[in-house]
Length: 622
Image (cartoon, rainbow, N blue to C red; front, side, top):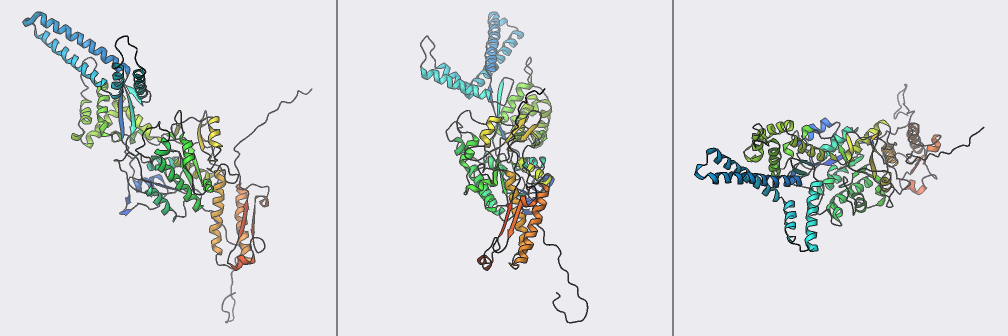
């Protein structure tokens, strides 16, 4: 009623005919933590601030549009045929020199200018051949092999086991250098390896939007530092995670750079605990991610397997070490995370984003060697005059300009087959990407188009050429249903269907309640939506009127979800139940203490992970 009725007249009182409604909270708002090109925008710092963006263009505008210039070292190993050809060339040029010397000696002072010139040219060719052979023999792997062979007996004496073992190991090292090389050209096998940190947030955001990403949060923890080969300090990441607790909207947590966190002092892949020691800090950070999500209860961590792009022939695999090393404070928190495997060969980076800046300056001489062999005329020995200035640029980088490098790079990208091979190798390395960011995009796409209650599986992952490791049915058994319960979601290539996400389990795979990603995330969605809606009733009278209003509000919300297929049951009563009231969910003491207890039970849709079809023949009927 109106508060003050003292004057005669007509008074109007409006009464709400409908109760409050539960507004669905967003379900796919990832928060990305990592390093960015720019750490300030419009005069303000971006460091350790959760910045909301709505598109890739907005990310590039605020955080920088240039791809990280990850520098790669280049190492060459002479092929056996190169050594054999040079040895033959030494013999050939020496024979020509011997013949020229003999001719000059024979005629003595009567030697003609032509004979003297032929002798000089032969000497030059012979010296060049010997110098080239000496350079090849000075290669570390070849020198070790030749030294081991030189120690073998030269007579009929039987070599010792130690001598034979030395030759075997040297030969094995040499063969491995050739077999594991990225490409071979002009008698050399070339290996290309990233020397500086591969900052992955840039490619992660591109991968996210290529797979259906929408709005998200970016938290920059620093700029690029190309003097470091790996990330060793996890404190900036953990500090950012702590700050993220103040942000209520993010529902997914992704840290693409976690796979770059490693101990640079651990270098031998053959040691027993290589993965455990190498990536100890990475595993620790991933445990912190799960702890954060489990404590917040409103977000989900998408994880990657460190070094999940290759597996050793023997010893602990990357998946096994991940399971052994990643462990949250509370095992129940495992349901708030999922891990995807293996890494993917993608097309995120384009050719235009790769160039000379991706080369370690210490490897410029390898580029000189590469170009010299390609553009030297075999008959005349003359170097192509158009390429000579470019080679000079790489030979004397201190005297070259950025414009000169850029012009030379552009020329080589079009004219040089060997340089194109080198750039292609770097492009392939840069495009080897862990799947978490792409999966965040798929989560977003599925949530926005089908609903969070649908499993993010049996869906193609875009801009992907193929998984880095081939997984068959037998291998996935080990990934999907391990004894530990830490399920790993596989990404597999299927003939005629493409590259599909072929797993939908959380790290709590042994739990009947929280085994599936969509079940965990659907409950998070319902919990947070109801939680936000019931805040409107805080400090209201804890009586039957309030209880009825709350029950009707939640009933209406869950009925809507049931109609959309999120909850299973022939009728709403089979799909959910909501209870609130004295004697039902509360005691008199609860009411005296100011506590209102609401009980909500839901039947969430579980995915059909295993489909069994039984066939049986019928007997022929007359």
